[in-house]
Image: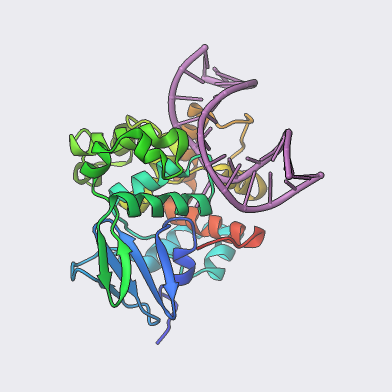
Length: 280
DNA sequence: CCAAGGCCTGAATG
DNA sequence: ACATTCAGGCCTT
């Protein structure tokens, strides 16, 4: 039943976009906001709440996307090696908190913190004899004290997290609006949130707001660009400044096209996999 | 506009 | 053991 466009669930989950997923036996269980998703070995996804979910982005024309981003040998190799890799469409609030926490951190610690946040502030649910904690609602985190949030191991990001949650409850940040906005408008709004810079904003947009032209530039992607794309995108300064980031992003959209976010995911996965395998 | 330094934390390194 | 470094940035100076 597998064809070229079957979703590779394991690799997609283990590509740095989601953190609250665990595999037991053959099935994956994941927290997505107020929902729990189960993916069986055939790659069939089911919502525990029987809610229709766009998690797999089934409406994307993946064939067209892959064709569109396949501009050179490097990206073609990545696409070929990880052809089932997909970008998910996850719960925006959870995604936002996840990537605020991600700054200056690593996957294992992000996961630990998110689990603690869920346990402390989320609702416990039991399904199929397994216990889960949903991701807390924005109101819950907005009302929590900074000290309480700090017990989840997030350190200096605690006030950011609280303020971010408050901005969601007060509708200063409105995810539905942002989903319908273009890249620049969504980014301008997200950047008002403390703890959300260029990179974090791009992650939130790519992974939860349907902005496939977002291209998160973290230290890994910079290394990748320096290694494989020094001709296409030359990086002048040591640290990527605000201006540099903007210029680079424009060049990247020019080069890879409107689905460049997918290019990022393939390249990132390939390079991380070559370096070390420390995923969920 | 750019560069430098501080920031919580815990796993890895020496 | 214990100190230091470093990790998938952001913010302030």
